[in-house]
Image (cartoon, rainbow, N blue to C red; front, side):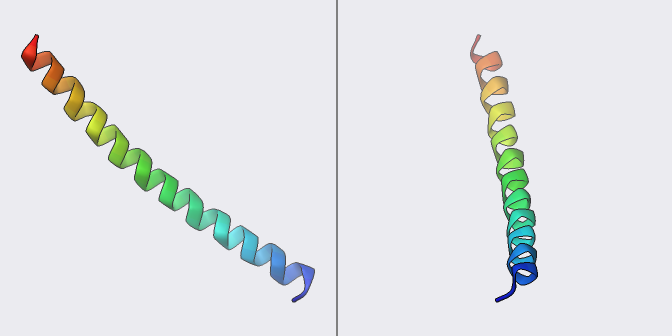
Length: 43
């Protein structure tokens, strides 16, 4: 494997990791909103 191939694989992996992170952030923000609205209801 050449250095160029290795760099391309690393860049692709980084893009996939960023997509996964963004999905997790979206899921987490959904839970945060739900928790906040539930705590507002109970107050």
